Image 1: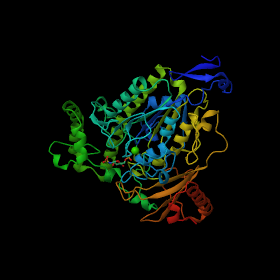
Image 2: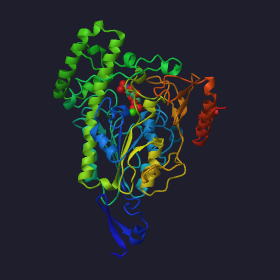
Image 3: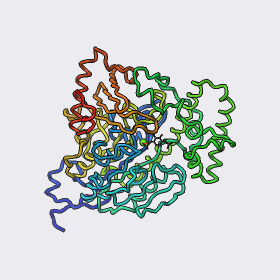
Image 4: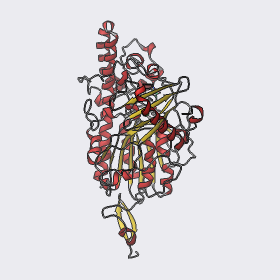
Length: 527
Ligand code: SGN
Ligand code: CA
């Protein structure tokens, strides 16, 4: 071997690095381009249900491990709060109008476009994706993929293979996705190359079906009601016309699972599908718990007030969601343990996030979509590899269009000009953030008319304020001061004392629409 070439051991792979190249590297830094990336993304997991963000409801010790050893972003947002669109933003680093996938109901992801996995693959990375995909077309840019059809099923789920076969797997989806991910890291990849692995869970998506061993978990816990559970939506027209209200829209059977023998004719196809996935043994275990709960409920339901019923549904929702999350937290722990045991943590960026946040009773809701805080936000924690010294909270505004340029940057790949996000590496390198960072983020939601009936809207959020325009079959504006009104109950739009703030925000919104080249600005020009 040439004397000038040393072998740098990274991620279980031997990488030749010239002595000259090494000399120019910062002391403890790994050579650029050789870091691994493990990207874990859940579905509908919200920061309120993650103890490193919020201690009120559940403990998530393994998710917290990532934050405790690394960084926790306190202002992490999505660009369009829905599964498919979020995934498309993440893969492309572009807003929905640029990547073409604006909504779940009519979208088919154009897999021929430039994506971050493709660029990494070209740069010599092994790329793999396991779990939920939800972009309709088949994945492109991956050396290996194994996805669930559509939303996937919690129990004994089907997986689609790269040969286009659909295979039914035995077990609970969250465990299976992790088994497959660890198996790929251990046996499936070419260990002479760095890799990026996308671990995409269905958890904690509706209708929150727990793993058998956690059927009874949280059953003795009573969750506190959010302060605005009984929101009346005054001054917020679009908020008043949604169909994601716990009291009114959550289904007693499908969501709340209050089912007794004899109710079969009332079961929706979705409910029947979920039951149909269980083995006989699982069904007996499941029925033992949920039939008992159903009997208790129907014994008193006739005398329940409207509020009593809404609060009952809220408790059931919170408990089932928390049960599903418990399996997820266990499985994130398994991935971290694997990386630790294989001495890969120092050479691997571990990212944990969700496709968007979720309402846990705030405004009386479940689901997401709105640009209000709970669903505009998404949890984001990272465990950083050697060479990145940042720890603790990062308070700068970041968005899911930033992930693609971040991973490319980490791999030493040039970030193409048409990518709209920003690399987060400058926030992760030093002990604090660089002075110049974005001061606002842009959001645009499209899926209407559709399930949950959230009107189309776009808006801007700064550190302190948020301006939203609901459009299409409505034309209303909302303005919030997040400092004085963090629960977004008080629409200040049109108040004379807010004129100056409004003008500034409209200008900022206009600027962002131009910068990101959103064609909506032709239809609804901002003056
Ligand atoms: C399903 C759910 C909705 C949910 C969408 C989108 N209904 O249609 O409640 O908003 O997915 O979710 S269900 O009856 O099928 O459970 S997303 O996270 O995939 O965007
Ligand atoms: Ca989702």
